Length: 152
Image 1: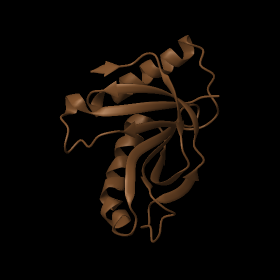
Image 2: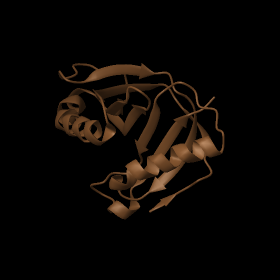
Image 3: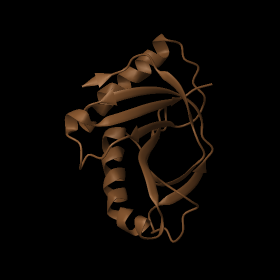
Image 4: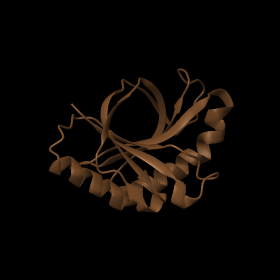
């Protein structure tokens, strides 16, 4: 398990995002969101080209978690239970984690600690977790997740 502690500044482009949203503690909402989304992926993919799997989350008094996929174009014929937004993109501080998804709650906490320690100016937006490789093809120890913190 490894995490880079010196973030890179990156730009996330405009994205067509299809997602399941839950409000509440991430320990409960993240697994439920992904379970619901994965059940709907075949129906989403039947008429839309899926490009990336990633989540958006917002910490604070109201915790919001979104499990989703980006699609190549404006989506068509989405199943009930998913929402769509066009994300405008923007500047992010990227931390890269290599290891199992089960480590993400602790790693995410470490990332936010580094953000505070380095006094990184964070804009009011969702943070992202981009799942770079496929867990059906890569061993857990080699899964790559980019944790993207919205930066001014």
